[in-house]
Image (tube, rainbow, N blue to C red):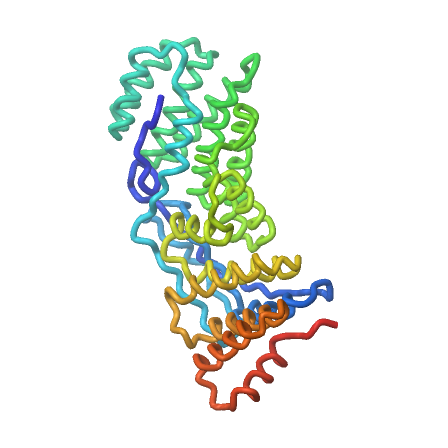
Length: 380
């Protein structure tokens, strides 16, 4: 069938997006299990009072954030305000769903074909008229009928009528489940739009569940998740971040990276993916990169730890003044990491830069000793 609808940020190019605006505090707890660089970068987590506010495609721009969500912070460093993106480009997933999981019935009726034409032109009401006629032409228990009903569900989704979309998607699912052998492509398509709708409803658990099930069907049908659909893994990872589950979030990002067929380093690739999907959220993803750095430090994977600390600095420096405490402490952590790796010149350079931008009145040696004593616990 090919691409059915241009997908510019949500439903029918309407630029739908919203955000999780509950700012959540988290602190790093080594419990005596981690060594070396973890003690250095653990300071980042404490200093920042790391607040995570992840912006993604949940609903359209006409929907306001929850009035009950209250930002919280326990540190002197003020939490950055959420920034709403002007637009949200999200072409990769939906276009690829149509390219890879084609819903074109084997014997399409003329009415179904005409409905597809109107859908491609974003003339949704006209498309629905022909899909309704097509559904009546098919055997009500056939995969062709299920195809048409699922496409009607997607059309209602594009009209921002989620409840009606669910009705037709559920009906299509029931038919598909009762076939002698369920059509995996159809199931992947239905489950994907279940996830999209639940994301609109801000039901993250249900959205995540159906994204996973859609990917499972793709794997069953194709044997793997093709690179064109790796963005679904990124969305699942972002949901984990909003749930303050960094470990599983990182796992999903690694999974997306593994199927992306890129030669870029992981931290660079992820930075680009996050900036594309969730623009204007640099400060928040800087905090996320700090947490990932701590996780890699705990694994003594110093290369990735360094890459994510540097990435955190890049995120922060887009929006924050260079003398903000979070940037000072990020450079102190980098300096400590370099010393652990016996890169003393690089480490000293980071300490010197941290001292410069901190505008401290103490002499350098005295200031650095106080910083390391306060924020970097030596290995036991």
